[in-house]
Length: 195
Image 1 (cartoon, rainbow, N blue to C red):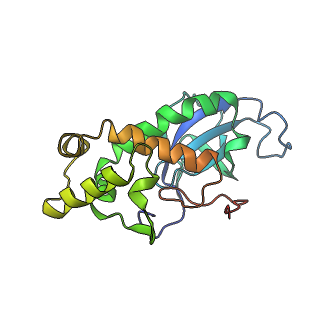
Image 2: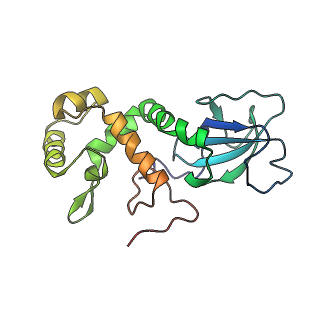
């Protein structure tokens, strides 16, 4: 479920900064000056970028990585998989995903309003941790009467605790495991769909 037709990230959040590059990664002229591990805010793409000289990076910094003049990134090295992230980046990832989900509340509330079945027997809402069949039917019934307006509206009308946190858990599952159905992320380059 992509937000629009573009395939690249405009902004990303810093997960980790490695001034000497990623351990075990091959050295190239692009990575000799260090690596920034990041997650994009549109597709939750895991990226590595080459830092600009004398720039300072902290976890959770939101930086421009799109096409054009990048103030803090020399260039994008490429996409990486969850397994390529440092332990520090993996530790930072759940809270950064939740920041992104909360910052894009209208998009994710719209997911609750417009989500569809993924198979004849499974609805995409059921892929969100904490939502089973009974709660899914309740959400469908309530949204049919009036669309949801916010996370707090979902919490109050459905009695679903912390919808942003549950959505963030789903995003993390899609990034860290081989999931058959991807709701919010793009397949990785070496994504294998489970049978």
